[in-house]
Image: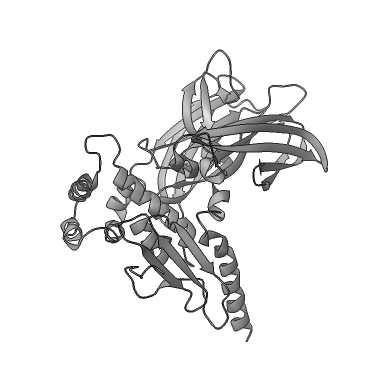
Length: 438
């Protein structure tokens, strides 16, 4: 009986979580929250009064904002505040407001257009709580993120390592200066810790090593990348000499040969006789891209393309054993689909993988990917519905949804029913959506 109640509780909880995702046109649920990210790192301060510099990073994507059409463009406003508390009293604060204006409607839901910023707080020893609030004044919506951090004195005998800052981009420092400046470069933080989504297949990170009172002449820095399920996939060791009280290290590690998935970056300092002194950890992700699927899961790549491709086109992709053969076959397929041959972007390919990403965000079921579900497949085939009618509570009926498409050559209506009332909506007949207009 207890097991049955527990199972019922889990199903109800999952349904409650997925309700917001069912209306991806108007409120993107977890998608909205995912595309507002917060991170931080602690470094030793050069100031005699404050012992540390707390760097707080935030990143805001267009996909998390609410846009309105104004004067042939689309505008969104946001306000962000970051408050630093010590012993329940406000220690420091930061406020910023911004207007975002785009001309292309597709930019309003973009997951690649964003703005990144960094706020530097000079702090004393103690325990702090950081509370960040992202406010949408148009719809009076507030998203809150928070974390706690403990600041200790840097009175160490042996070398000590700072926090690890994951880096997204690098630029030369300017005369005007920037909050991103570290030495001669601006280091733009990777707030979401996600790599492999562009052509630059490297992970970048920055850290500082403090000498300590014992005045070590050098220190060995051991770097390990550990995959969640595959274990250690990268390791190196470098010996670095102290030319001053601080070693500032910026590192780049190529990831093009590493399997996608979740990783842990492990930095270990070793001293005399290779004895471990201290270790720091940082999580990050290498994204699953079409190129990664070609190499590591070609069968799944073909199954995704099967949603939109003909039987002949799918057969042309099968039976390819080497990476080169697979890449040539996939490129040949997408070249035929390209609506603007000769241009830099293949719009058909970009839109296909955008739809897969949206389907995974909105329709993932338990441990299954959203693109495999009935709603996910219809979304990938036809795009965003012009209208969604949702009926979560209907007397003597199962919950169901109706998706309407008016923009094509034919009116289409798809009906999805939560047959088992487990939050997985199944498509019912007619499967091609060719209902008569009522």
